[in-house]
Image (cartoon, rainbow, N blue to C red; front, side):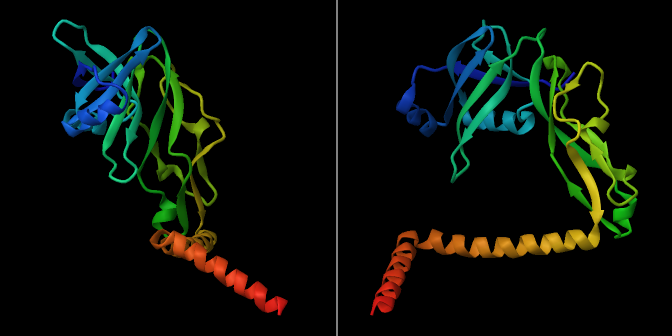
Length: 234
């Protein structure tokens, strides 16, 4: 059974734009919902929420306690909203699970070990998808699925989703042919990396210029284009 993380929450009366007042006082608005749960507005201390989310992510059970008399609620953090600039917490949705009913969740894939051919600098380990979707009971959720890359001993050898070994009560829903990790020829991968790096340099350079003075850059481009058209007309 997965580790259960406890979090104390409170009922919330402020909704809509008024929730800004909550955040200024160190509280984060939240909502509790589920297949057998009417949506309930909640609030939680920002520090407590941040610590719980750091430990739980989206695939660990979080036990919500609402008041002294209420029974603990078994939940998953389904949607966490953050400020795009400061990354501070803005809102979180808690999905109350039914412990006897199966749910779907994304489980991260963790790579361990070393590929012999990569250790010899004869190939490069390339990561594919980093999580898989599973279906199981809430109590059967995994923190991660471990893949040992030491089995990759030859070029072009790969670990696919279909190669994952999990308990029989966990059903993997992700396409079994999806690649998790693969060994590619070093020379080919270096060429790809150089092309990607060159493209990133060009894009980043243009992005920085536009980000600095977007309106001025666009205006200068328009003026240059108009001047060129006038020259051609004359």
